[in-house]
Image 1: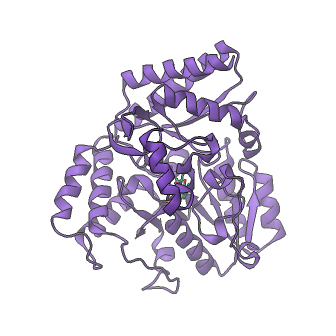
Image 2: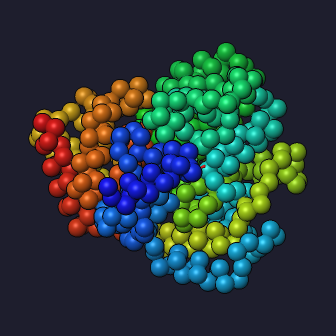
Image 3: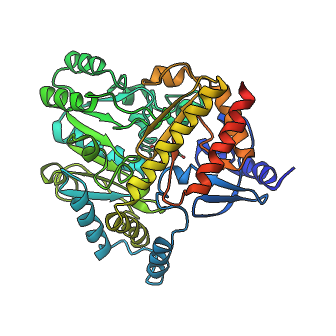
Length: 427
Ligand code: KE4
């Protein structure tokens, strides 16, 4: 028994499922999780001496690769001045000013500590600002674990076979309506059925918690039009796409204005940071200047702000990162498609910017039904095979592969070699 297995046994005695977040338990791939010791560049290292090309990237934050010196040194400098004050600091102003500068259509930002908090708060603000109770989300999209959003959720809620959660009262979720991603008709039907009652339409602009499913041509523009028609707010959950599709995120990438935008992951540089943002008219309805309450002991934490600022400033000063990582992902997806075709193994590889997902399915995957209808057992075999070949992927189909600026030609070649070995074993 290896060290990871031994640690997992100990972990399961004191941590639910042995983990602090369900997807890490590897249940969807039916094996004991790798316990990591460190990460550097494009690689992670486990307790048994394993070294893996990493496409989890901490679920998105590590866009520059792990242990980037610019971020590490910013944190090392910050910790010398203290870890947390519970008081306003210069860095929080600089962080908000930088986000307002880089992200279109936002005038104010509120920092929180996770994507969950960001989306939960944005939904509360949408409800407070409109005086309406209902919200529309999409089946298979995941927005963190706040009660009203654990309905038909994606990510590990879906992988665990519980897209809705125990412990959430019916009274809470009765206002959460579910539409189908890439199906504008399903959205309009709900808006028309509940005229004047829907506070917001909440969407991942690129669905990345059912695997990666890009928005169909006109879908996001259509949501904007429907929200304007019915007086609902359009909320882009950019916890994954924020600063991933470019410094302007999905609003810039697709040219669609959202009323509220949520962030996480990349803006923390690996530290616990989330944020929500919007117009001054909306954001000044948040306490202490408005009636929508939200607070947090560690919100805007000075060390976390140092990490986030270092990463965002680097991305602003090095725009070449984006065509680099997008180009890598595009080439990798093309190579994977070619290999699967040659091996006669049905696979759909979706890719948007530096996000990609292979699905083992016939034809294309453009909806939640397509994603959830793919061969999940084959994904589990694929995951295990890639791990054996030194490539660490998301341990569940309903996640994304994340490319970082540290992934280079050697990693590219080795990833495709591993993919070919594994896929050939299926044919
Ligand atoms: P966190 O509370 O995990 O920081 O963010 C929640 C969240 C909100 N919105 C989107 C679009 C997200 O993808 C997430 C979290 N993503 C998952 C991975 N799919 C985090 C990994 C995990 O749950 O351990």
